Image (cartoon, rainbow, N blue to C red; front, side, top):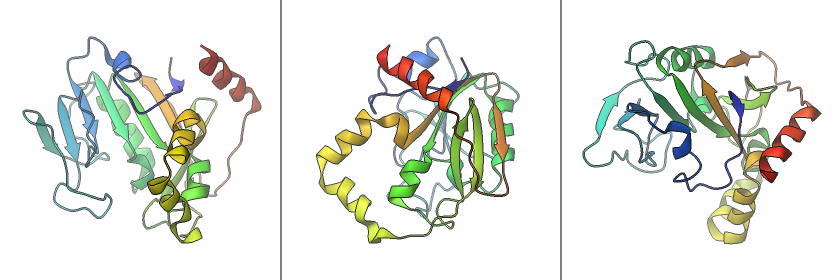
Length: 212
């Protein structure tokens, strides 16, 4: 089942929870200020600074926190039954190393990043998002971020003020965000130049998930 999936909304009670049924050890990597409540272990590289997030680290009461880096995860091989990682991979210094570590420690997992379409609208400079990520034939592809901060935060302000715009993004989630599920391992590639290859056959797969 490894590859792109469609998450219809941010209500993980039905969409994500079904991916880790019967999993005992669930790790949220890069939990930040919006932790995945179903996780049993929460991991963050910057527990005391907010340079990559808007507010303080949040760890649900009674849950375990581990200070760790996605490029050197403090877990044994396949120790994690399910790994949840959302809005982290676009920030890492070495995406190949991060992916290798995810594959090493996790039996299965869910990865989510902004899509190239999101990046085109919301614009993040390289010092904020090092990588633009796409999914090609169920492979995660990383290219250097070539965007700079423009539009003067227009789409960020629109998002904050207009519920209809937020509703539009959630209803068309697959184009704004990369939603990726894996079992045991997955393919990835880091390219030196910002080139993506869009496969038209992938759209038919997306359409079948949306109609299902």
